[in-house]
Amino acid sequence: LTTTPTHVLCQERAKEMADWGFQVKDVGVIPQLSEENCQNFAAASQAQDAGFAIGQALCPACRFKSGCEYLRQCRKAKRAKHLVMPHERLARGDGQQWLLERDIVVVDEKPELGIAPQVQATIADIKEVAEFYRKLYSAAIPTASTTSLDDWEGSSWNDQRMDAANAAQICLETAERLIAEAAPIHKAGVHYLDCSSGHEPDWKTQQALYKIMSDNGIQQPPAEAVRLVGLIVSGATTSIAMTVCGKDKRTKLVTASAVVNLNGKSVLLLDGTG
Image (cartoon, rainbow, N blue to C red; front, side, top):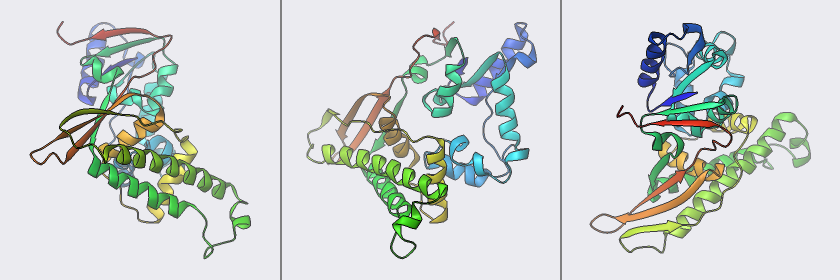
């Protein structure tokens, strides 16, 4: 497995491997989502912006799934002996799954972004994330006006909604803990926060959360803030720091740092300097 900072560099590395003697069929590149390879691109982009892994949240129930060019390219890349993908996929659920199937990992250029990604967002944006998950939670749980609780618990879809409600609650509580810890801090400088993780939702729960968001017209918050909360919930974070800055010292910027689990892998780090 080789990872690089961008999709463009992934393509360049694949071409270089061909020049080195690799057969084309033995090198697979994870594709970049686009209008050319995704017939449901608008919805997929919306899901990504809301922090969902589209392969988990959207693709399983997509009406274009059977003839999807994006999924075909992903399957073809996954079957190759050598897989190339962007750094940021390492920290995502689907990237971690592909990582498990590889013995050697080459983190090419800016390795600190590949194995120790950082995500930044302001407290103001994190407040929007809290409101987003509050709405998801409210939309996921049963109400007296729709059905009785006994009837609501009876079907597979409603079981998924219950799981989605629990996942939304975990994300909401994580965002609220961040906000609460940041509230009394006003001194300029860097401050470290303590925020425990929850449990990252599985693909069925992601699918249910996305469906609830779409069905109820819930607008997604800033993508980086969603990623930050998701990173904490996944349990991958090693530190969470907040910088108080700005002329009025009211700007609070939170940085979450994580480390990708590479246990048992042979790892080669390349810094791009030759």
